[in-house]
Amino acid sequence: MADRSAPRRGERVLDLVEVMDRLRSPGGCPWDARQTHESLVEYLIEEAYETVEAIEEADRDLLREELGDLLLQVVFHARIAQEDAAQPWTLDDVADGIITKLIARHPHVFGEATAETAEQVEANWHALKAKEKGRESVTDGIPNALPALVQAGKVLSRSASLGDRLPALPAAAAADDILADVDDEHVFGDLMLALVAAGRARGFDAESATRVATRRRIATIRGVEGLE
Image (tube, rainbow, N blue to C red):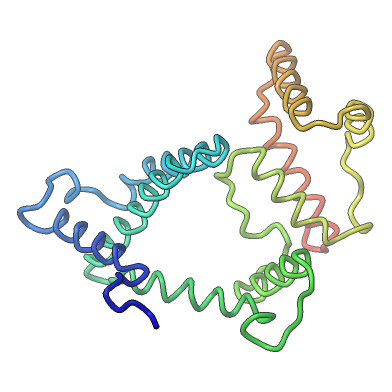
């Protein structure tokens, strides 16, 4: 029998909402009260990267702390949105939206569809997402503001569904030759760092060059899809 005296899961999230209400209300904190969606962007990005760092360092205590900081940003933005006179919404609306999305995107769990592998689940997810949002290209919806390597990885992952219709990357053969004897991710990382250094010595900016190359690849993908 369940222990009715034990706190319900998520109960402390409600307490966090109450704390944020106090901070944003008259008599609360002047700094918190003056923040906007726009002014909080830098903190949202910073907390996201600090969370990633905690994961990479395998520091579970730090990860718990950083997830709290990230959760604060969600609650903060929801509280600001609640105050909008024209189109207010709350944290409950945020939760309702993601619940609805998760159920719709997992028909193999909540519906009659089947998906035996993680790859099938991912393919179904992207297909459903494209249909919901009226997207034409597999690359639609990938944020331009992503770091160049993250953006490149997403473009390559999404476009894999095009298979043989998509021409090889222009420097694919050269990359395969360079990586022929590399079988360790640490060595791969050292090689990437050395490549950045060699590029810098020649006046190349790795971030910019990768972003431009990714844009060219997106144009190629859209051409294969008949959208260019």
